[in-house]
Image (tube, rainbow, N blue to C red):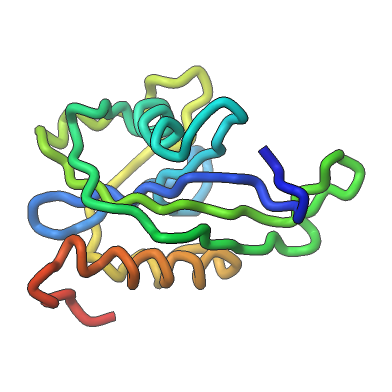
Length: 164
């Protein structure tokens, strides 16, 4: 779903464990790591897309997680010019994302990357909270920082977020 400004509606998922670490996943066949994310269909709310993407990308269901919160507004990033496909209509210039902070309730063995016909990821690991800012592709870095900054107090209500 691409809006009139050229942004594809999307959800981003930050999944935490009981130690405050976050799930970091490697895109299949690449040396590129990111949080799970995915598009919102025309007939879905962001929350419905969250649960669909959660199951498709990492094999978890609603009962496996607790939703701690989400960003108040859409966070946007632009695609680098070489990634914009001007001949596709409508033209997508970037993504607008609602980010969700989740806590894993069950066992991490429930995480499965191979449930989809076209898996997004081939490996995952737990990393320290701010670690993704060191590895995420440059054009997503600002959105990641905004999401982690806004949602961090929900995961660390005592203000004890490790330094960047």
